[in-house]
Image (cartoon, helix red, strand yellow):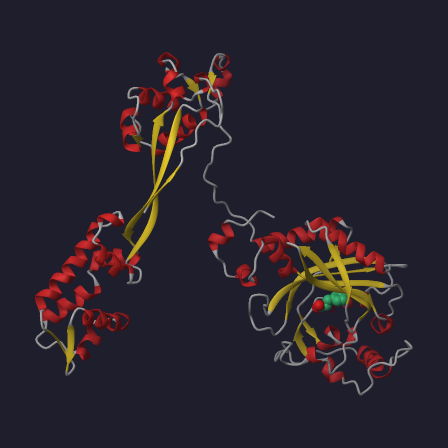
Length: 508
Ligand code: PHE
């Protein structure tokens, strides 16, 4: 399989020889010695007296850019040994080892084979032998034509010995055979380059190609003496491609958390960090989520065995009970039914970070505040492309006199604009603890994606805690946002430690 990439000529037009680097001068001089010639890498290396391929490739690249040479790249397929193939070279092919054992034993029995070979070898091994015409008769291996088996195995071995090689140079039946077996051989594309001189390259006078003494490294000695004044400095070509150094860096999730954090800090928020072991009381009752709400069921929430129950002050369970049963002092009618303080005390893994903001408000009910958190929450979700049982929420509240819906929407829009998503819209939604409630959507690749919920806490939530000003609140999915930022269509990619992927992630 061959295909040719057209060489590109003269990107920098009218370059003169003066700007050429020493390796480029040397290579061009060599190429001038033969008018029409396709120079291979080996030829260039010997003629220029270089050992390092990178020098030749670099010089060829430079000359091509200057319009003095033309690069031709040919990609060709090479068949080489893969992991299992290298092992087979060292230890012998599986069928060769089995055949040796069969040939050397008096009565080669299937039952003995299992003790002589590993289980993962015995099964496929018998299959290989059968295809070579070795039969099992009464549990014993027999072959009608042993020399044919031996010669087939020998030619398989010599096939592997020939690698690496171009597919054209190989026996095609053997190649098909090995392609159908797992991990023995692999095909790789290798690039071969040749260079030829152009008309402009030929026109350069040879004395313009004398190598310059140039300084490529600036030393203290050079700077201390006066020598630097007359020195020729080797210019750097910052447009050349180079290898990316592999350095330690933050995981993209961590980097994203840092970015979210700095945006909220910049907007005047303080960060709240709190435990994820919580009571159903704070996680749900305080937020006026009815005790028979489906989200509270075992199949949605991780309840704990230890601690199964966490004590709560009676004044709290009483206050929540009153609100839930008849609305307390708020004028609300509540949910009716009877409230259970025992249910409140159940230990669980928080299902949202709102459990922490509500406790912050309970402890600081009157001072105006702007608080956010980026933290882990837990829900019993089956893992799939868009769901994980452990994920993160970006949570925030603003409490102050006169806070209103417009302010909430503006704050969220500002946050997403700072994240790089200027198109945000809100839609009416429902949460038991907010009124009005909204859903936040962000436009991404022409589609609206839902990223979270928000609203203004209801009096049923704020009044029992003695909160006097309106509280704007929101909770948004961090992984969802990560999927947008990193362009993922599978959320699991974030947590599988795929090193290759991690290395290639942008720095956030
Ligand atoms: N807690 C909600 C959730 O988990 C989000 C939310 C937070 C909604 C605050 C309104 C107010 O999805």
